[in-house]
Image (cartoon, rainbow, N blue to C red; front, side, top):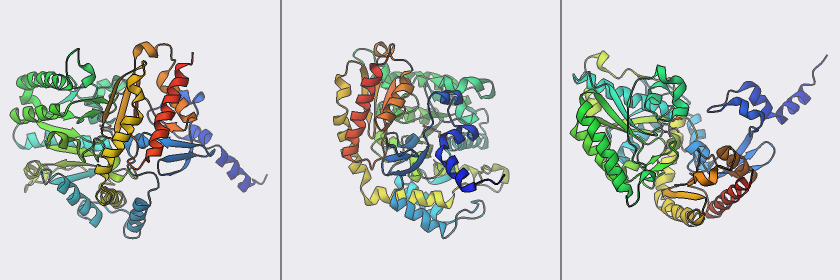
Length: 454
Ligand SMILES: Cc1ncc(COP(=O)(O)O)c(C=O)c1O
C-alpha cells in the first residue's frame, strides 16, 4: 500500500502532545500524570506570550523557567544570533577563542568592577555549580589544605540536579532517591524571613542564621572548602526571601574562617532582584559567582562561573596537573555568547535596571489584593519577583493545589507554576503594564475558581 505522505504528515502535526508523550521523557515530571493533565504543545512565542498549536495564548508569567528577560523572539537578540551564524556557529574553546566569548567575559568582569576577573563557561546552571565546587576544592588542594573538601549549603537550597549540585541541594523531593550517591554536606539554617517569630525582623532571622553558620565554621572550617548561597531569594525553596544583612554576615564569616563563598546567581542574577548582581544589594563580592538562565536572554543554554584573580592565579603554573582540567564540548558557544552580548546591550541601551524599578512598583500595586486576601500570607517582593503563600487553613479543602492552579491559570491565559502552596510571578522585564494587569487579574480569578473546587 502506498502511503499518502502529505496526509500522514499533516495528521501527525495535529497531535504534537500525543507524539511527545510517546517519544520524549519530559523533565521534572511524573509522566503518568499526563494521563489526566494534558501537555501543552507550543508552536511559537512573541513578547510575553506563548501560543500553542491549538491557537491558545498564554502570558508567560514565569519567564519560561526564569530564563527569559526581554520577551520571546526578541528582534535584537534574533538579529545578533543570525549575524553570528554567518561567522562561526561553534568552535572549541581549548586552544581557540572568538570575539563573542572575549567580549562577554570583559563586559561581565566590568560589571563586577574587576572584583571577579575570570569567566569559565558551561551550558547549564548545574554545570556552573559543579565548576565552582571543583575549583574551590582544587584551590585548597593546591594551597596545601587538602582536608578542606566539604561544602555547606542552606536549608531549602537548590543548586541543580547533577550529582555535585544535588549534594548541596536541600529539597527532599529532588534528592531523596539519590541520597546514597551524593557527598555528605552540612546544611545550616536558612535566613528565610518567613521564619520570623512575633516581633522579629528579617534582619533578626538573618542574624540567627549567621550565628548558626558561625558555630559550624568555628568547629569545622578546616574541613570546609566553601559555603553556597542563593543571594536574597531561594527561588526553588518556595521563593524564600531574606535580608541583604545575611550576605554581609556570611561574607564576613567566610573571610574570617578562610572558607570560600559561592554565590549562586543562576536565578537571581541578571537584574532579577533589582541590581544586576544580587550581591550588590549587600556591597559584597563572593569568591565564585555563577550565572545562567537570563544571561543569554533566555535563548540558548549558557552558564558561567566568575572567580577572583586570587583563585585564578593559584592554578597558573608550569604544572599541567595543577590546571583546572574541566571541559564541556559546547563551552563558550559563540551563538549563546552573542545572544548574551545582545542581552547586555539591551540592558545598557534601554536602561533596564531603572525601568525594572518602575515595573516592580507597578506589579506591587497590582498585587496589593494579596495583602488583604484572608487566604494569603507572606506577600513579598524582591525586584522582579513577587510571591505569596496560601495559608494551610485555606489549602486543605483545595485538592492538588499547585497542579489545579496551574491548570486553571492556563484557562485564564496565565502561565504560572506554583511551588507547593507558594504562588509567584517572575515575568520577562519587557512585559507591559497592561500585561502586568492581565497577570494579576488572571491569577486572582484562577485562585477564586480553584478555591471554590471541592
Ligand atoms: C539557584 C539555582 N541554581 C542552579 C540551578 C540549576 O540550573 P539548571 O537547571 O540550568 O541546571 C537552578 C535552576 O532552577 C537554580 O534556580
